Length: 185
Picture 1 (cartoon, rainbow, N blue to C red):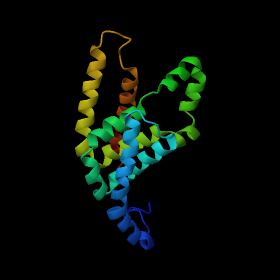
Picture 2: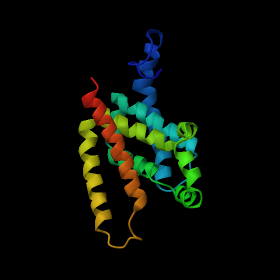
Picture 3: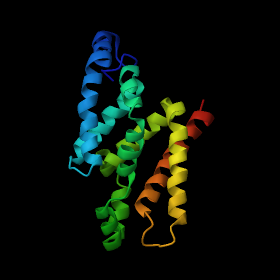
């Protein structure tokens, strides 16, 4: 709220303008590099992952940073957001060994605060809401392609259940945004 002139108070407006035009674009590169490390299978803490996704969400709102992000939109959508929304091996193991704990964890508001998945859905919501023209067609085409591949795979053991789950979560996120845009004035 302090780095975006649209949300800053009058006494912070000069700082917010400087941050928006100068500082935020400089910080975007290292943030995206951290997320690229994660997308290639490297390790970053969940806190760093969540904070990076939160910074990306704020960057979507501002023109100087969005211009930089737009060139990498496929990476953001399909290499950052979708893998974050996918179930992890530890999630599947927990579900198989202790389904009650899995349900508790998934529905625990305290866990949500720290979960990068929540930050990923927030980022997806912002992209769909604020940058609909750039994102909606890409996302729906990608979902259609991946779900068709999933559906056509005859071997049940080769089906990518994790990706299907991530797509369903993303579709619910998009539906929620679109409903609010058209129903709530």
